Length: 631
Image (cartoon, rainbow, N blue to C red; front, side, top):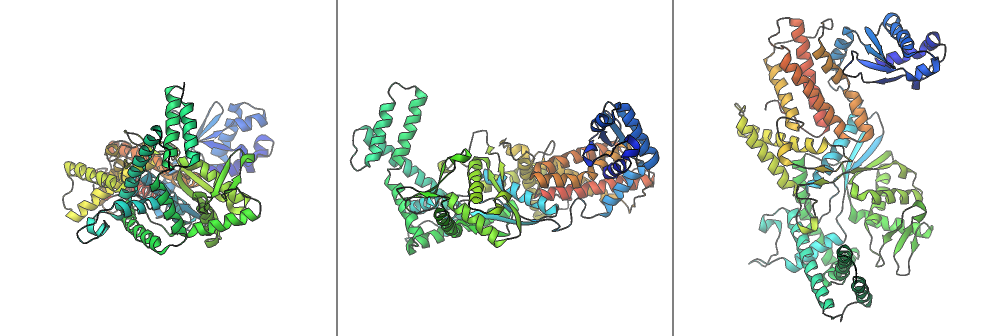
């Protein structure tokens, strides 16, 4: 309707105002709740050009739209705003069109460009945790929304399966894993532990031993024993200890932290891990076999976790493959003068002219860093999918600087598509106890958290009853649907850019701004429709204010998908759906539906209810959430 009004005004603008009216001058906004109207036309741009009062301009436009075009039933001018009301049959026709379109809200499949969405991208030295849940749910939902908006979407992840982190787990497993009576070290088969958790256990063990050895080194230095340590480290130690004299507690603590890092770099266990990395990059058969074995354990564990999350991928990339291409790209950039080499053999790029700093691309021993593999992965992806219009990287905001540098380097290397890369930066998830730290083993495990919310949903649902007629398998499915729906909705209803505090108990509450609140509305409507006889909407039926408000909300759905797709913001969909459900609940509690004696009114209200359920199911699917028919 707004498009129709805009076209009519532009076409008749000379006749109405005495000047040609451009598209940008016709601006709409939502009508404020305290005023009557279905949409509001902002008059200020027209007032300035016409040199007339708001009331004069408003009356001219209102009369024209009501009497000549007949697309408006009534209007009012309030200040610089023209509030327009649409006729009854417009809204019933809107409802009829929504009802007849089973894919309402979605654009034509693959009608837009090809986009790749990266999410999850775990390290193979630890299991997935709460932060990965927000990452996966966010990335998967963005992919769903882009698909609904008509893009061809490729869902992908880069698995960080190499580097010093996995070497730490490998070394700790070799050194500290106990042998059983068969002479076997711990593995998923003889411990019953998920593979990702087993490998993560030894990452934590490495850090424990690492810190203990560093502590011993500091004790030796404090006792004046410097034999066997590098001259550079000893000199720095003396520099830091001398600098502590006369400093306040905060400055002394900062210097102590520097001494700890200095000692860590002198540990034998870190040297062994670095040696393991060099041997791995040199394709040492023994190291490579150990790496393959332990990563295999992790992949089996990840697979189980992803299935429980309800996310999937179209294409997997592995850092162990792409870092090789990344090293080639760095060497090519070195030959072109984009990068430079230091005396120790390490390769860097100078970004100071862009207000950044010098960035390491290859270590002095020739091993690669994260930036190296990310360069290789980006190029590899555009080689595999030359039709890509862009890549969306779903990664926490702690990596904002990394991606700024990555895109800048790609641009300097001459890749025209570098400007099509986008970092979907999101805030970290906190707990009441504070930020999670992987190396200390204090993470909130993703599997444990999902199990917890599903169990909580089971307790809540069992207490309420309403499970008659369900067998055990159906009940277990329902518990998972409610628990995972609550968890996903809780993490997605918040704007991605915002840091958030997660409370598992709140996520599965049946009342309030939660997933189960929305799921219950869908189940309630299915129960309502199950009790109704056949009905058919008559578009000549008079509609009341309650029905009209819901139809208006339903009609917004395509634009909500568009907005969410253009901004990569699932919270737009989540909050829209919550508002829709609140409107329906008010309608359900205040209007007769099944007991309505007027068959046309009953059909209207049932049609409204049916399409609310349809949009709830569709919008929740965009969030990766299933809605039950009984709850």
